[in-house]
Length: 373
Image (cartoon, rainbow, N blue to C red; front, side, top):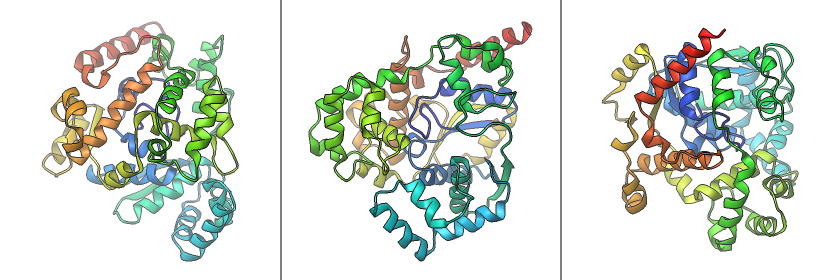
């Protein structure tokens, strides 16, 4: 599961611990965090990072959703992407100023990759090529990925978020789409406001040189100068993002870039981190506990308590000397704090503060919600 921010570069509506525990309460055995450096990147990197972790866990099947329910068509598209002819067409379209997603769709010439979920499905199959994991495609039903209004009991996450953040949320309508515990969390939690990113972002840009900004991952083709102009000429996060969007650079890509600026993720960091993984446990039941026992000693770092792997002192004094996975973990923690800053009452250091007591409080909240049904 993504941690504090989504792949489109937006803060998760609920913190990762509440979402993870909700998943376990709903029947999931084990929830692990997809590291920030994979979660807030392209679909290709998102898929590769997830599959690498699942491989380390010994998972034999990967289930994913898609509007297209023909796995063979998705496999064909995945095979085409790695061919030399398509790579050439893709390069030409990117050079012409097209976004990656649009260039990929047109290069493949297929109706398969017309939605974000289908594109991610293609990338999952590409990532599975080097593993023994089998794909399990689940047909998406109900609303579309980007639908902004709730219509029925199966709504898009975008629609639920839009309703929750509306001036007067229709909680009855929302309650038809989520379980009682999640509903209670949505009504009682301190929710993040993405607009609060503007001041720290503008400050970071103002205090940086062009060379420093140029080192940030995804800062290419002179984007650093466009970003500096945007910071000096806009007065809100939405206005800043809007001024950066173009045919080549989508909203999601720009929003991810903003998070990389704020967390300080550089292109060198990504080169050093790619291929590295660890298992960051967020929640589990008894079966999940047995899965964790089975992988101990596998050589993949297993992070159940943050302080056993990384402390605040190490983050600020010795980060450059630590192991690769610890430096990656530091970005997860920065992202957690950054999301908290977007809330009314930030709980900084949440990755250190979270413990079994908080999980019990969450379970009590669910029990209370169930008793009022």
